[in-house]
Amino acid sequence: MADSSTQSIVIAAPVAQVAEVICDFASYPEWTEAVRTVEVLEEYEDGYASRVRFVVDAGVLADDYTLVYSYAEDLSRIEWELAAPSRTQRRQNGSYDLADNGDGSCTVTYTLEVELAIATLGMFRRKAEKMIMDTALKQLKRRVEAGEAG
Image (tube, rainbow, N blue to C red; front, side, top):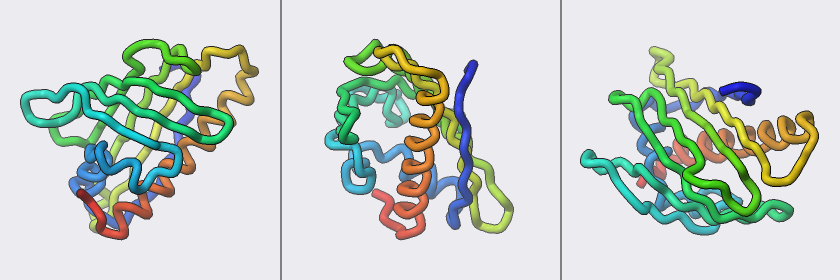
């Protein structure tokens, strides 16, 4: 992904537990501040979501959009792309890469690229991406380490 932002965090849990929380889309409104509703629209044969609709409200940014997901067989990579332009986004590509640290913890690397429907300076877009990633990773860490996987 050209011109994307990347951020990492260490979570005190194995890869499988972290992947379980990431893939439990229905519970996102319980632990992510901006997500109001999530609806799994389609699933792959293995039961993992392939198309997921999100309604988010982060104050200045509210949107309703659908993401298309794909997964590495071992769930070490979970990636997505925007299914169609939304009210505020022309494009969104992202991924979580999960790496086993060998000590029962996992490093999660979040990569995100968003093209907004409104013109914005690149530095502001990158700052927004970094804020989104920082918040998402901290909330993911809190959820996983609290042991509240669905």
